[in-house]
Length: 408
Ligand SMILES: *[C@@H]1O[C@H](CO)[C@@H](O)[C@H](O)[C@H]1NC(C)=O
Ligand SMILES: *[C@@H]1O[C@H](CO)[C@@H](O)[C@H](O)[C@H]1NC(C)=O
Ligand SMILES: *[C@@H]1O[C@H](CO)[C@@H](O)[C@H](O)[C@H]1NC(C)=O
Image: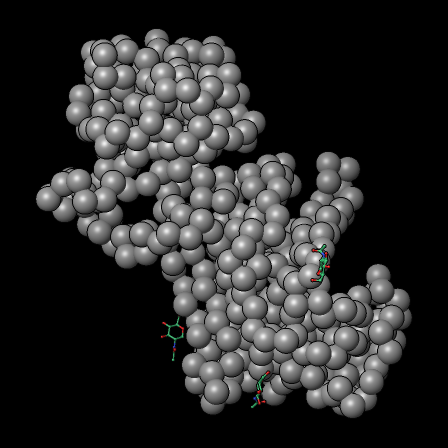
């Protein structure tokens, strides 16, 4: 018991944030680029695969500098670095510029979470500033793009690249219109879990998509920040007067999901565990409460789905905790059903605040809210006996709606 308590204590500091993007997650990384030098225990310079990519600049360490004013400045100059005669998907390129890029490959890579970066891109439309995530120690597929700016500075693009079932590389790219990038510093956020990818701009949701299959190939991801020249911006003529061009990064913060593992859920009032009726494997079997018997049908795989929500999968049948028929009324029954990442199978797992003077209890008690219905997993008040089916009810701050999460 004491060991469990300590683990929870260690993870509390930033559970209690109120913005949607960080709900159910804890901040694990804070990089304000306050003073030189660049922290090399976190950052490498260049790209994970070398000093150049699909644009006209070679990147070197001298062009990626943390400044006295507290920025990471990536500076592109008209300085020929290398002549390679390279060709990429954007045409033949010549490394006639020099610029900066940094990455965290092999030093700081994460699976699932929320990344938020504050930066200002250069006004020069011939530059191609970008921030993206790539797998550790591999190439650039799969890729999650937080932001990239080419040509116009009044919008930016974001998206993902992955390999489809036939082994072909596919790219999905979206445009955030009317989003200035070079006037002042803006905040770009990306959240991903096992099912959803969500983008934010200045703390406002830009887009959210469900891509469970594609996300299966997304594992440990490392950050890359680069200032390219040409590439996707190749159609914009180069105006020599706009160089050197600087991309300034002010702040980077990263959050990770609080839970990823197997748990029992024990009701705070009745002490019974959430389980599947008769260890059934059937679609639609009832979720009810029962004394602890050690069965896998009393264990639940809690995994971050994305956008502050978790999926809760039974260990024995791999079916998902589900509000029957997408019900939203008080009294909607809970069942197990094949998981499809729908809102009736997504849950916010939140610690109960201020309900108990006992610190251990306080930290270890949770409500489980259905995303679609906004209602809580509850033991119905009219029957609290073993074997009663669990239901969704409006939050009444009742102990019948509070659960201890026991890591198994
Ligand atoms: C560099 O980063 C590491 C890892 O985040 C951190 O522990 C260390 O304090 C940082 N160093 C400085 C000088 O900020
Ligand atoms: C972009 O901004 C302009 C001017 O504020 C407005 O007229 C236009 O409708 C906006 N477009 C979009 C797609 O939001
Ligand atoms: C870093 O960039 C900022 C703004 O983009 C600029 O004001 C500042 O002069 C740059 N610092 C250096 C040392 O280049």
